[in-house]
Length: 301
Image (cartoon, rainbow, N blue to C red; front, top):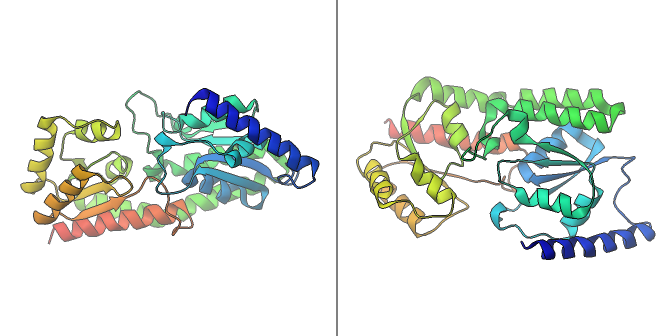
């Protein structure tokens, strides 16, 4: 989005907000709840689980069909930014639009960047941090800390909710541990790095050129060499499972899936955004981890 367009949207939104406030029908008072904006619905879900009834969360990217790289602002999101006391962003370039929204709004909310919490840096770092299940408790604890500073009266409740969130990850971590204990070192393929942290936590290895997935993620065509190597790994059965981004399908992805089907390689679709059919991040990630385990079991028969 062009900066002038972004400012224009925010200006209209702030005028609308002023009108709502004058009429006594504006957003819930910050004295009652802490208003939070999350760049993506999975981080918004973590905030909701930790904050409980003491937070009002607006997640900007919540539709599985939305691409964060093509995000365009709306009056609703601009108003949410203008009234937010806490903004939670992923970082690593994944949701730079959120930084621009905050800057253009003139508001000064606290900003929690998940990549900073986890200490993940680097120009080519995998931004899909919500797939790194073992480290999700760190995010919940950071959210509890931020909310506790904004709402000290409920600090103990936030901390207790963060512990409950951590405990709820046990089934997910159990499946990941089962994969690691039974299939560590098994080569797999993915079209994008979306499930990269899951693959790493499960002890699996990447059996195709890493530069192939990087190129797809960057929006460029993989090199002919990488494409041939990827296809050969599928046809020769070198990789045992193919994971692909179900939210991004094109001619190349369709062809790779067809090749995997013809070669008897099980396929697992993953998504970047939490689908509406799941209530919580951990439920969504558990379903995908189970699908990966089932695919590995099928491949080993």
